Image (tube, rainbow, N blue to C red):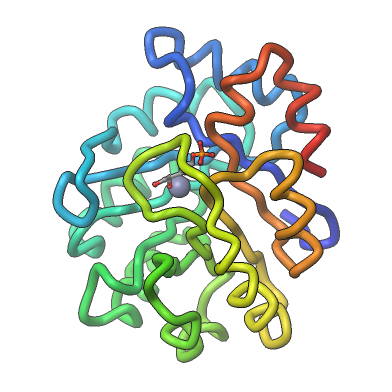
Length: 212
Ligand code: DX5
Ligand code: ZN
C-alpha cells in the first residue's frame, strides 16, 4: 500500500450478491486497488448487510486489500472475527464506541491496519487525538447506511483540514463518481470508495479509470 497515487476501493454493497465472487474478480481485473466491505448492524445504522462469513468467502478470490468498514456499535467485540476472516484494514466509527484507543489497540494486536471514521455530523477534530495511531481516516461523504446517495459537498472542508495535518490514507465514502472524485482528490483524499458508480456501470475498467 502506498500513498503516492489515488487508490480506488469499489464497495461490494452495490455488487450483484448472487455472483459476489465473480464481481470481486471483475473489479480486480478492472484495476481496483482495494475491495471495500460495508458491514452494518441495524443499530449504528438503520440497515443490515454482511458479516465475517462473507469476508472469509471472498478472501480466497482476490489478492486485493480487504478494506472492511464497520458501521456497527461496539466494534471491539467483532475485531477478532473480522481479522480471522481475512481483513487487511479495519475501519470503525469514532461515534460507535467510548474508547477508540482501545479499539485501535485491538485491531493492531491482530496485526491489521487501522482506520477511524467520522459521520457527516461529526467534527473531524474528534479524530485528531488518534492520528498518530491510525493508518487511515475515513470521512463519510454521505450519511452511512445505504449506497447510491448524493455526495455532501460540505464535507470537502473536513478533507482539506485533515490533509494539512495527516499524511496517511484519507478515504472518502459516499456519492463518489467521476465528477465528485475530482473535488475530493483536489482537497487531499487519496482513497476513493465507490459503490453504485462502479458496479452500476457497464464497463468497470472505464469507471475505475475515470475516478483517478
Ligand atoms: C454507505 C457505505 C458506502 C456505500 C457507498 O454507508 O459506507 O460504502 O456503499 O455507495 P455509493 O458509492 O453508491 O455512494
Ligand atoms: Zn463504506
